[in-house]
Amino acid sequence: MTAREFIKWYVNVDFSCGRRNCDECILGRKNTKCNNQLCTTCNWKNNIDELLEIAKSGRITVPTPEEKAISALENFIENPDRTALNDEFVESLKLAVEKLKEAKIDGEINT
Image 1 (cartoon, helix red, strand yellow):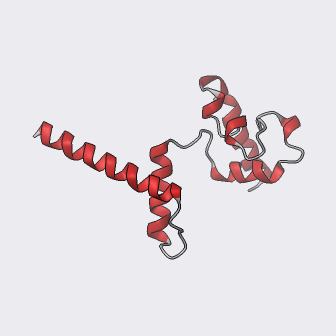
Image 2 (cartoon, rainbow, N blue to C red; image 1 turned 90 degrees about the vertical axis):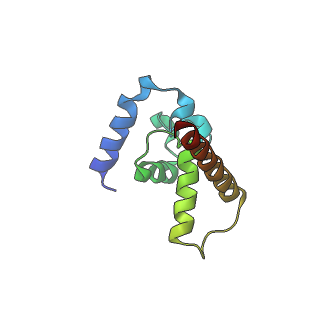
């Protein structure tokens, strides 16, 4: 990631800050490994690697449970031998089944 790409990403995060809650922000205290608000430059000193990892994702908000589930399932489909059967993966499967059941029920009602 170039400095220009980082700055563009950070400006986008900062520009849309007033439109969302800190809990939804990828740089919010609850959403970082270091438990610091990485939107504040004074918190960058010992957290540069984490900040760059977040910036490389391109995200500015925390993924929804549905987005997390989709990502976990897509990762498994792409690399089935490398994905461990962990709690996050099982929860993703549960959510997918729940959504499929809802879609089936909605489809039966709408037909």
